[in-house]
Length: 400
Image (cartoon, rainbow, N blue to C red; front, side, top):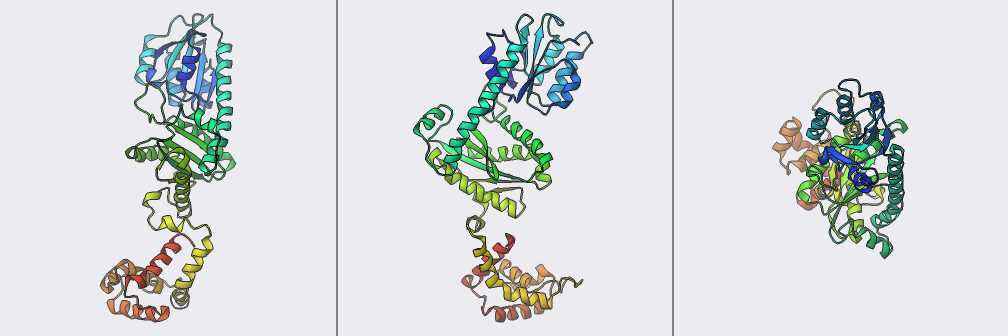
């Protein structure tokens, strides 16, 4: 988990005499890095989640500090620490009021306290956390892959997670260029800000972890009620909206599992849902809503599925290539035997239903159905007759 503003405050409030002036409800903000800030133009170069420290050298300019915090909030910064006493005796009340109303953390520290020390300590805490996440990531990946982990690791994370509770896995498959990767990683850091671990009612306050596993990024949530999942998915879609719009990100959501030792099951289902989202270019897929696709996408060898569909549908596909060329501009003639059979199944063998759906005369539909039966050597009368072809069409929908 990323470093939060409240962690920095709790760890260093005594050493650096930190005092919260406003924005206490925003103290759950993630801190990506810390910067010394004396010129507001630098804010335009921020990417989000920055903590800034300032001596307010430019505070002699009327309204400068208020303008600065507004720009920082707009840039999704984590918060601001003001070093008062030299250039600014006290923070103006209008700045405090604005930060409080916008939940933007504003802290002060006295001039005689070392800014350098605070920045160094904060940076070291971020770096140490990142290293710890990398170490933990190795163990979490083993759990996600269904492998054993040391008992000591489970004991250690037991203080952060309910190991016997429910776990749900989200798999994100990105397609980004080298130039777009940083944009994606910035959004990933913002995803951490969706979750809260301190006094905040506006965030999801359930344990989680985020990591990169080979071809996908994984988010796992612990004891998150099912009724909150759709809201979490919506927040993910907003944070990564550009990637979803450009069809460069596909999200699969698995079913919940009981206990962290079963998290591999949740991971497998999330990956299956992600595969369907990716292969069928659907932005988001829930495993529990996949229906028969949940079984088909579970097949390790897609050639098995393709050969199955080829065996059943190739007689009609070959007939269509010869008798219903795609270059024909007539709408009715573009409805070949494959489309007719698909519609026949979808309309529960109703000739009238097929005629309406395909804008084709009923007699023509009847003639085609009789020919299809002969070509397939199948009477297409019962559910058992039609089911294999329905499955074959599902396989074709998968792009196989």
